[in-house]
Length: 319
Ligand SMILES: NC(=O)c1ccc[n+]([C@@H]2O[C@H](COP(=O)([O-])OP(=O)(O)OC[C@H]3O[C@@H](n4cnc5c(N)ncnc54)[C@H](OP(=O)(O)O)[C@@H]3O)[C@@H](O)[C@H]2O)c1
Image (cartoon, rainbow, N blue to C red; front, side, top):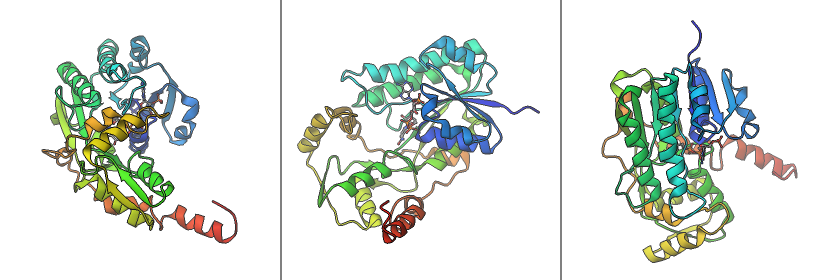
């Protein structure tokens, strides 16, 4: 029997890469639509994965690419927009969801997985969360597409923009790290568990029309997580939580830096604890991994890379 094809939007990102690898392992053809295939050629070393250059905001292109796919998975999401008024979020989340729905209908695709975010709600404090909520509502309202929506807390794993990014920041920061929103609470989910939940849901009829919150085994404040990373890296850093007003000020200033490393919209998202009221992993028979069991495999002093760097330094070859 010919392999089924799964069409991934946002498949070149952090979650998408892990999911594509798992889908390929289970013998699916994986078609990743991307704006810039030349930046992601490493992905085609995965057997059965192809990259297709596509403007995902073009409904006609989507319709053409969705034809013949067993399922469409939309992972596109942005944490920050170029402007400041929410239009970028609306376009990347709500408008795109509308185009994906229309293209699924036109192409006859009848299974849609959609990635939203924990705390997405119409009355949430940030553009990110409000537009995520609107997009998810649209997707679930398209009943004939047998959609499933996933709402993860922050996701961690190699290549993430959470543990990896904060570790890089800690390495570069001398002495003291002033941390905004230090008491914000998260239940980080391992990317492998998230990818597995999506994969298992594909043929799971009980998941059609439902949304699932996805949380890791434990919850932590941001301060606790950073202090854990400091210990893991063997660094001498003091992590100091900023009071509310200074957190706001840090966000207000940093949103004008290139690449917007932190923004007022991020600050607003962090005003709501990122922990689940029910854990959707159970519905897929997944017991979520404990963060401390996974992070030392890719960060810290005892990873294979850290050992290699140590020997390079001993030989006078700077890593
Ligand atoms: N990572 C987390 O902690 C986390 C937590 C909760 C929810 N989520 C959600 O999970 C999904 C995947 O997250 P991720 O961390 O894998 O994201 P990511 O690494 O930033 O990847 C997102 C992908 O979407 C595409 N994309 C980005 N902006 C786009 C735009 N304006 N128009 C069209 N395509 C665009 C990019 O693909 P190309 O450049 O190849 O086109 C990119 O590779 C997102 O929807 C995110 O909101 C993530």
